[in-house]
Image 1 (cartoon, rainbow, N blue to C red):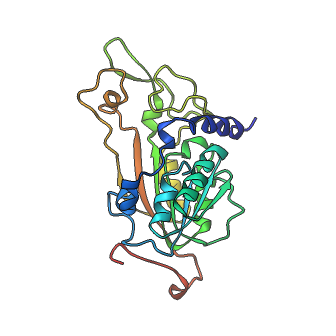
Image 2 (cartoon, rainbow, N blue to C red):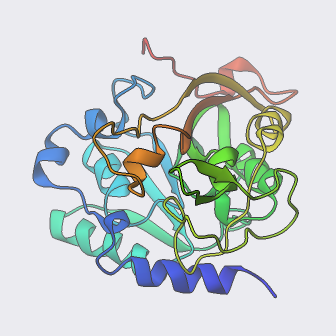
Amino acid sequence: MSHLPQNRTAWNRLAKGSPFAHVATDEECRAPLATLDSRGWLPPSVVGLNVLCLAGAGGWQTILYAVAGANVTVVDLSSEMLWLDQQEAAKRGLTVRTIEGSMDDMAMLEDASFDIVHQPVSTCYVRDLSKTYREIARVLRDGGLYISQHKQPTSLQISHRDEEDRYVIGVEYYRDGPLPNVADDSYRERGAVEFLHRWDDLIGELCRSGFVLEDLREPFRADHKAAPGHFGHRGRFVPPYVRLKARRVARAGVSESTQRIWTPSG
């Protein structure tokens, strides 16, 4: 049975009152690119660029890009999360194209039609990461930017905390299939079907799909004041996420004059 219906149901539920359904505030919209990008990965301006927010619905990322002047498309599995984008865009007088669909099958989008693909944590919800990467490579123009965040595999291997508050790796690294239910679900979304992607998948498959990795960061989630059991305490021992900046390499037979390539210097 496909995991997509279960994940759609889970995220439709999370759209109601979840921290993941945080819409962009007026203050964030006053400096949209700075809000989106504290690392300097984005160009100085996205005005007129075609941006795909992949699995990024919820009224935050898409709205910030639209406020910054980009032509925004969002593809997401959850109709309720997409509705938040539609509602917030209408409220602010913005135009955002919303499409309900899975990240590993974007047949509705044309080849080489985007300058930027920005994807928050979501690849854990698909079994075959290579299909997603190939789809992203297909829809990105040569020289296009892919910014993404993923759950680190070791974080998804944690099963529980022992009697001495040590975090136990109880899920096999070479597991095939959905992750099991575990006692420690600090960085899991309840009700969703998730998959562990190894570093070979996260980085190696990215390179094999037509990308060059330009930067890698581990978001800081440690809180030395947090009590055991709090996600901040767990973050002291196991980093939960990794952020990647990758560039679509030129396809064979495509001249440089036909590419829309920008660099951080403009």
